[in-house]
Length: 187
Image (cartoon, rainbow, N blue to C red; front, side, top):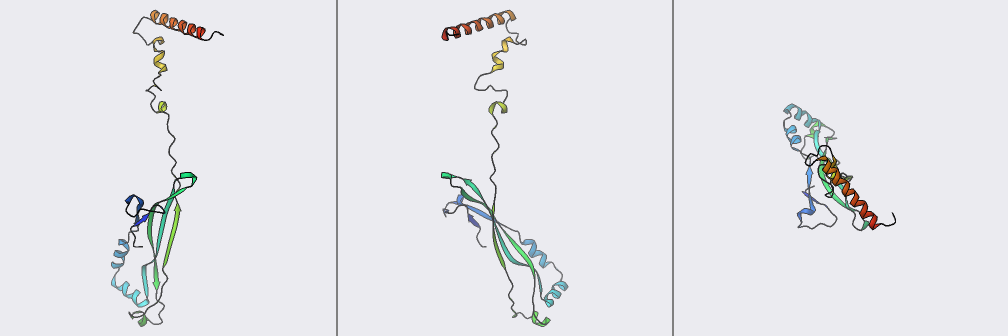
């Protein structure tokens, strides 16, 4: 597969780089170097017997896709990635005599394969949002700090005398009941 990129959607802009994804490939350098490092006796014995090892006989394309949204209730499928791998096999010539196998003009057909696999990748559901007050307990929710509202009544408050704080609190409660009594006469 000579292509280096694959389109993400069904109708891609050929000039828009955001619409294309790079195709990843299996590294073949180890296969090539391993075959060159074999000793000469082994290579010669394989040649005379008509064996060829680590021949790339197939190409496999894995296309990973997922749903990227649902405009108008219709799911949009998007290609997320693509990977090309190769299948290797050992071939043996079926020539009658050993001398025929060494003849460079001898031709024998071998099967090659190509496959494409579409793999659906499940969507990553986002983590549930943490409520602001659970994430930041030291910050008041909507500028209402209940701990600070009753702080003058707590024993740790030492800015004013305790008698003064209790008197002001009782006056505030009296004004609150008076306001409720005036605005709701049926009480």
